[in-house]
Image (cartoon, rainbow, N blue to C red; front, side, top):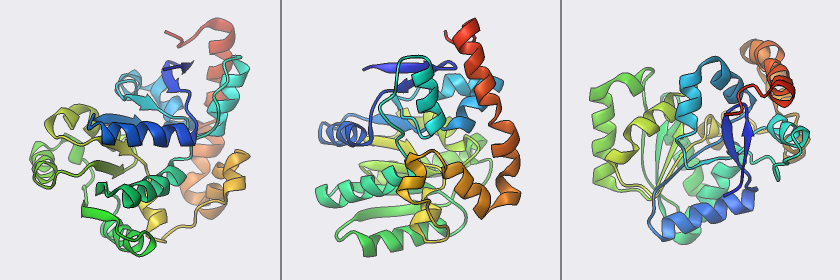
Length: 252
């Protein structure tokens, strides 16, 4: 499959509908795949912390959840087809699951959030089969006892789809370390999607996402939480892209 190298990450050149086709095919053929949805912040951190680069590249697919990645690919004259919004993809996966009787399991979110999301989604999609939810405490990815509990749950309930909603690379690290210990047909990390599904935060409109201003929406909504990330940390992305283009930095 065609991919685009952006600062050492092999970004899959899939649009949203193609990503759903890959997911549906994997579940129907009962072949497990792992998908991550890197955004600008992912990429910047993977440059600063090379072990994250290695973790992310062990996924089967990295779909671009950020317009700056699309802009960078055009700058490299190897354009990605489109941004694949992780929050939108979450609802599309739930719709796909409801239509095809695929079972889901939600891992992560703050206390009670995944459970509330499951309740809202059962009201939204008739027949959706959400087997259970599990709150993962901070640091769970390095706690073998906690990991064993989660793996036991997954092996007992046997969901087709595992959706993880965690930040700070917890979900990605845990999945890459443990995905061989249970049999699911889609493992995907989708950040704060449970919060949107639970109705605790409002998603940016689709046109805002398409134009690349999702970050501005989130900054206005929660300035104290996001100002440092968006106005300082993520600005490094453009410097790194310039270096890759003209000095071949982080292209291997």
